[in-house]
Image (cartoon, rainbow, N blue to C red; front, side, top):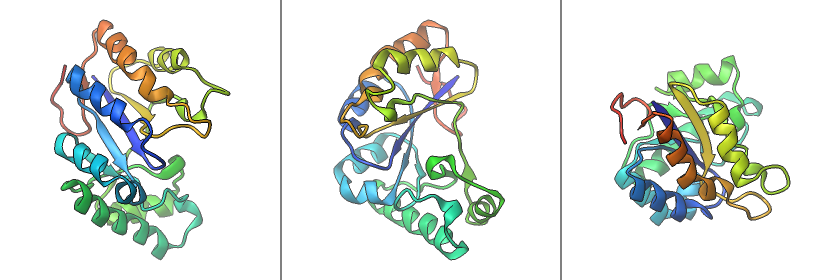
Amino acid sequence: MVVLTFDGGANDAGAASVLATLRRSGTPATFFLSGRFVSLYPAVAREIGQRFPVGNHTVDHSDLTRLSDAEVSWEIRAARSQIIRATGRDARPWLRFPYGARDARTLWIARQLGYLPVRWTVDTWGWLGGCCQTTAGVIRRVLANLMPGEIVLMHLGSARDGTRLDAEALPALIAAIRARGYRFTTLGSGRPGK
């Protein structure tokens, strides 16, 4: 089993393509959305909420380790409210810390608010853009780390150079993972998809 996860914290440049690919291929996935993302792209957030589980990615993708306890709590609570309004789904219990930045203090706060932090086993590096990664490189990186229970980190937005490597790689990546005998699921479902 493999879990595809998509972070929505910046722009939505690759979202339509990602959603179309997942729909066409019948592939389940889990989305981590920021409050800023759902506010800027309500139609995309609504479409995601109709089909997929969502997790909390804070309000504005701040490094929580640099914030006070009150600010950390606000980032998580306010994002939850925004995500529920936009998607119709509760983001609990899943939280992805922006940049993966967390420490004992921020983990404790998240747990007190009812969240389980979710990292990843492989980052596609698609967010780096064309300077440092390619569509073929995204696929190679995921397949090189393929293992049961793999959690793949991908993004809905474009890199700073405008490339949408994760969205472009997704159809071939799904096919390649399936060709290796893996199936897809979402966080916490325990039920395999295609």
